[in-house]
Image 1 (spheres, helix red, strand yellow):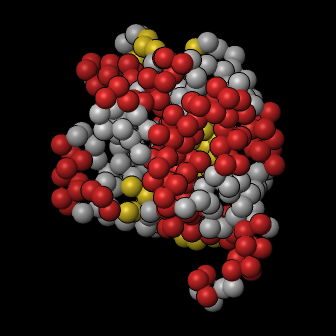
Image 2 (tube, helix red, strand yellow):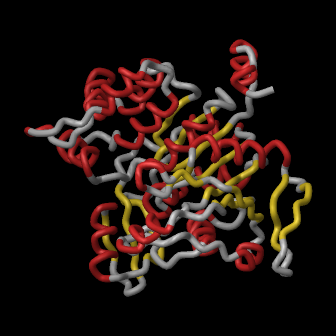
Length: 354
């Protein structure tokens, strides 16, 4: 029976009894995933990075000393159960004046931060206000910045500065870290990971949305010890200023360098082609379709699944929320993956996960 033919109360009961999912990341990638996931389960915890220092979030961070609200806001709205008018209001950006480019949703969180006296409580109030499916959590409430060490030994602090330096000097990121060190994960974050049936990293910017979460004390350790299925969702395209020239295996090796082996069981890749005109436009921005190097992935001991996940709407090569969530839940339910056997062929087999 098609989902839209199932009685509403049965769908609601199924989602309420759905598997516990911990989705970890930031940026537009995480909110895209959440839009699809909430159709399958109510038991979602979105764990969001707090190192953003650009755009409206950066302005509020500099002027008011609050944690960056933008990624948090996007995830809250993705899981919200409110009217379209409310979503439109919270997404509204002021077109001019001193607030030019600032989101009303960011300002709403700023006001709640002042009323509640803490960012964590402000986010919790926003969860309630928007009747969010599951919960959205900042990975830490420590005021941390991202720093990067490049191949030439130079170090740069701040997400915006890192991207700028990488583009200007054509440098390769060797590793990233947090300053100051020792930021502790929220207890609720560790609890959500410990209890999760399914842990999802990505999609999103590798060094600025995914890995910063792994650098917070307690997060990588919790993921590695988890008995849940750990999936990394590969980006569709490389990213100028961050992962140009990277392959899928390069992404996984970076995750292992920062989170150690055992951080991922399976990676999920898009296998749908992108339109020629879209590929040409990305090429002008030094971005290309992410190459899935299957032999190297297999050598890392990580399983690979490939599904058509592309949404080319709006002139961007991004994941389709419904297709992405469907693929993730199918992989969880059936435990089936496509495994490269070194013979240029795929086979499908039942996997026993730890």
